[in-house]
Image 1 (cartoon, rainbow, N blue to C red):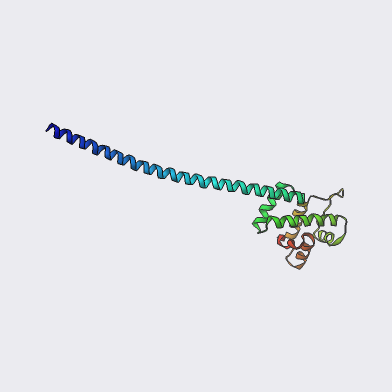
Image 2 (image 1 turned 180 degrees about the vertical axis):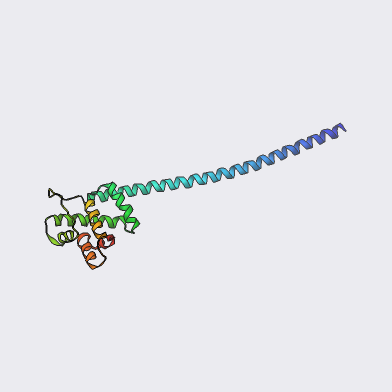
Length: 173
């Protein structure tokens, strides 16, 4: 009977160990699954952060190139870019328009050509009191304000064409 008691105790101890091992195994499986899920989330976050960083670099480099071509400060272009995107205008189109605007401001400052007449029709000065060209971004804001006060129609479109070129119609508010 003592042998039967010892055998029963051993069997119970083995059963308890098997139960503990089964619980440990189940806990390990749960832990492994959670660890795997956390790794997946980390990889997604890291990938999103890398994409955001790369896009930010691309935007900054693009704005720097546009600054070189137009003379408009990067910070100002960043604000214009945001406003342009809200109106479905691509930054490349905005850069082209800004370049065209700068060229026509220079022409208008000599009081000659269609651009000079267009700026006059809007009441927008391209030169300051000392005869120096104003900043392109300042003139763009003045032109936008003048357009906002005009009725839509062919005159408005014609003035936009003379000031901004073919892409100018997109900028009319």
